[in-house]
Image (cartoon, rainbow, N blue to C red; front, side, top):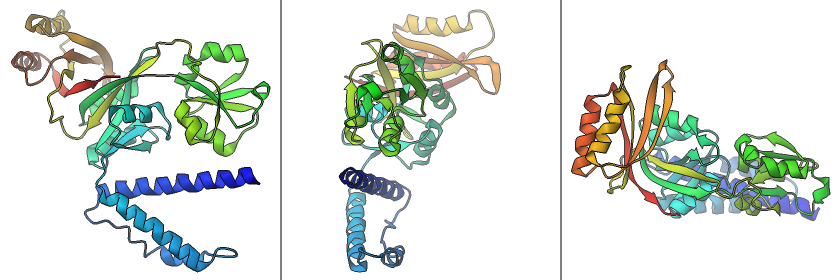
Length: 345
């Protein structure tokens, strides 16, 4: 019974946090704070039954509303991330700027839509993993969406095997996590002789384990998830390669007002011999160092490829300005994705 009470207390705090998050998100799209708490107050009092006195319910609810107003008045800056709380993207957001408030989203499409609508100030999205390569859904959205890259950070990724408190490791039969995490821990999973089961999100698998409490099950997620969801770390650093890391882009509706040291562009070239080489020569002749080049087929024309290119330099530098002008004139489609600083890690 004590364990059930502890779980209920955790669920109450989780819901309170979600309520605060929706409150600040609502403030972003409303000029006037709408949270006066009057409309649902009668329902709150009416639903008080048994040991819950209406006076207690009313006082408690008013406290919650007042605290929500205080949070909204702080004019906090929000940064969206894909997944549940405890995701590696959330950890990356703290490392990038701990003053930003992380807001979870189920999928990348919703994140990009919210950034474009101005409902959140920023979003942090994974673009490349050192083991798994490019995160193609994000790269496609960078090409298609009207957003700007305003920051970058690379984070080491260390996976933990999480279990319910006091679970005997010998009872562990299955483990849940995102398919990418399961692939990055394939050797450890094999040694432990447990069955990998894909889940939509690493942190989501930890949350599910805590709430659903399936028998003989564990989850692969971050150490932060163990703290958030009251789980135990059975094994740390179970990834197959120590150098596992993910590069994240920070995106915004508006360009970066500060000078940057790295730029990203997207472009297509004519179906002619040497067209791509001409673009690369432009950078070489200007003395601009390339950091990455990748390609994605266009959704409306799979025969045409969009090239994604990162290079070192600032869009305020004259040689960069001239090079980009020349490239834009000699490409079929050209999109400047942003100039930004690369955060240390």
